[in-house]
Amino acid sequence: MNEVKVAVRYFSKSGNTKKLADEIAKTTNCCAKQIPTPVNDEIDILFLGASVYYGGISSEVKKYIQSLNGGKIGKVVVFSTSALAERAFPQIQKLLEDKNIQVDKRNFYCRGEFTVLHKGRPNQKDLDEVRKFVTEIID
Image (cartoon, rainbow, N blue to C red; front, side, top):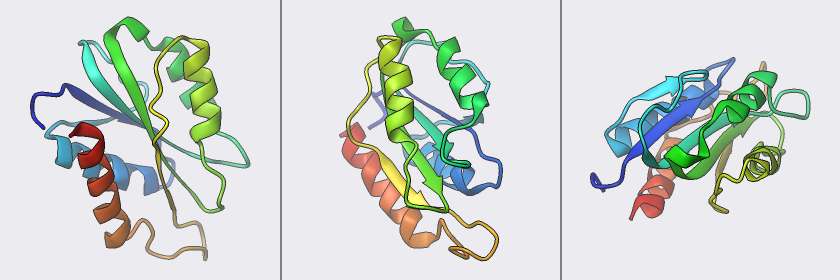
C-alpha cells in the first residue's frame, strides 16, 4: 500500500467530510489537507472529498477542480457526505472529466450529521467502511 503515491484534499463546512478525509489519510499514511491546498507533487491517486450543500457542491470545490494540474494526478477518487441521499460524485466527475482528469468510477458516500438529522454521522461504522473502501482502491 505504501508504494502508491496518495494525496487527500477535502472541503468540509461542518466537519463531516473532514472525518472521512482524516480516516483516509490515516489509512494511506499521508496527511489530509483542506482545499485549496494544491497538489504539488506527482501522485497516483487524489482522494477528493466534498459535501452536497443545497443540492450541489460548493464553489470552493469547483474552483479547486479548475486549479488542478491533470498531468500530476493519475486518477481522482471521490468521497462525500450529505444530510440527504444525493452524492457529490456526478457533479465532481463531470468537472474533472471536462479537464481530462481520470476519475475512478468507484466513490464513497455516507450521510453526515446536520442539525437533528443523522446524529453522530459519520460514525465508527462509516469510518470502518471508508477504510475498507480505500484499501480496495489502493490494493
